[in-house]
Length: 359
Image 1: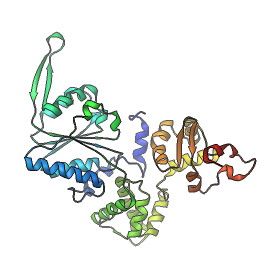
Image 2: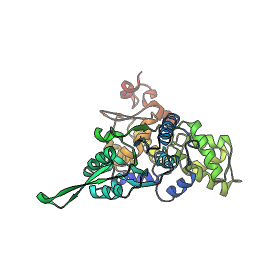
Image 3: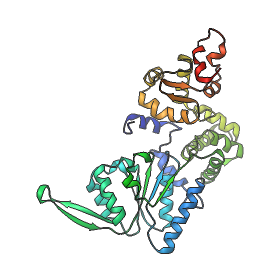
Image 4: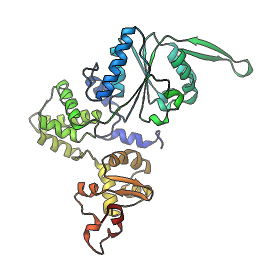
């Protein structure tokens, strides 16, 4: 799987994409909770992190290094900023792709203040030389700076002030064990349930000075893919619709009408998701069909279908990846209002699918 291809940009451009770019980042900053008491959801992570931070404050020490993993948009960056606020410490923000050489990391580490929080987003994408330098920095608060080249090169030890590294990753499995083991606290961020997302939406609506009723919030929450970032983005689009075409109040009817305009259906599927399902169901009888063939039918790149559309469809139980290819589940037929081929009776095009779904 290639994380540097154009499919990532395709995901960012979608209304239901979980990545934040451009204006989204600025709006997110205004909506972010400032401390753990305001943070909605992730109950166990909040409780555990609260204990870690309170204990560190009572000891007058820096907090243990923290690793946050989980899908984009679940609050990893927000939690890193909350950690800095709770520890009353400055925060330095960078990312794995930005650190391609050990010297890049050495420059950052050598300029840290005592107790400072270093937030390293997408830490799994950091270069290997920088990663190996980070081992010593995390454990001994020291780095060796190499001066010169070849046989005359000399390693000069550089002492670092105690700091807390907060690493964030969407793919914890790509982190090497030596790096993972150096984090004192590791947390996995789960997708939110609709009730938690409703709380997020009500809080954001208050900050945006938007009037919303419980049914309107519930409708937006149900289409937000379990992700607060998407919930806030949909809220802003529904707010625009309510302002222009309604009386400014977000109700269930207004939410449904607005999200219909933006092509986000009742389960959070957008145009691309539905195109994949419709091609799979209408052109290939529900599968199995190869990924490349499906991508051609949809008119998208193979990577876009695999990395942008499929993860959510699989998580929703609408599509299955099998050794023979992609297969639609009964829920996919139901969601699109279509009848599975095997239900067409003897001689129907779907008689060969009964082994997948049962008699």
